[in-house]
Length: 393
Image (tube, rainbow, N blue to C red; front, side, top):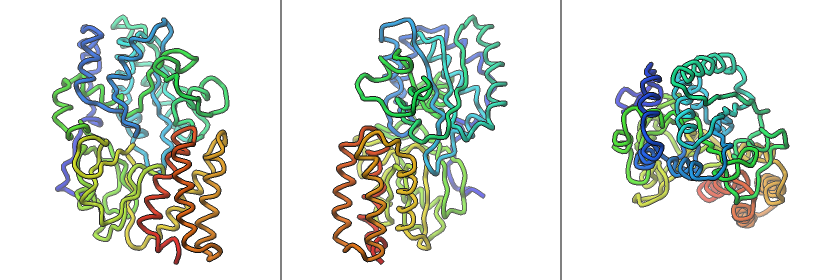
């Protein structure tokens, strides 16, 4: 049972049956005003990268061409994250409304929900909601249409350009950037691609206005965030909380009294040890005091009974399996990191070899082609540096 003292918000999951009035009000305004509201709200992408949502919509709206697309990224493959599944199950109309408004202001007439392969069980309910939504759009004289595209369970397809490749019938591999999706995305056309939660937040912004959203959170990290809480916690589940809280406050609310580390952002995120809880703020890097960490939503809590070597080994197993193999730093680097910590643990390599592995991880950060290979260093370095003794003994 959740902590009763916890200040839990209910903007995303509040089942408001006023989609028609929100769309009517928003469609009656100028495209520029709608985009400006989104920009002034301070909403940043809730998938983890944190790109300003309003700016993404504006760049796509300004892009030349009659063929444009809106894509909802529902490829929720990050270990420890399960919030988008709930959003699509409980309030899909908010996501669909956000897509339709995006289509109106950018000039896109077609939208897709790229659904994670493991979430195929959501298809019947989702297609039913889309059918009802299309009838509402016809009533409002809006030609925007949405389809669901199901992936095949590849983690790499959560990366936006690999997702486009998958939708185009190709192998899911990242593209070189630039060009960026706002000018050359799906089928080489201007495309807005937003996370499920991001689109759900746009609904609240267009319903209540940007000021209410901006009043939540802190500077550079406005609004609320939906967290997937798991691990050694008496309060597992999905919670909507304000950005800007310290990790110590989070642990006070969700920990079991013996929390020694929190993995912020899933396997590709950072592992924060107990000594840094009070100095770490959950939010986007900016002008916040202390070290700020963004998160796509996964918050995995570990207590003293957990071996951080086993945790890291598990993450590396995952990355070795999910690397698309396109670039050498990621394809080879993930395997060498895994073999390296195994060799140190077995005593086949000295503890100083961990320093070499840290150098390799940093090389991957700056040379890997996409976010998968680049982010391996996050969990690897933060666990090795903070729990070095557990890598050896």
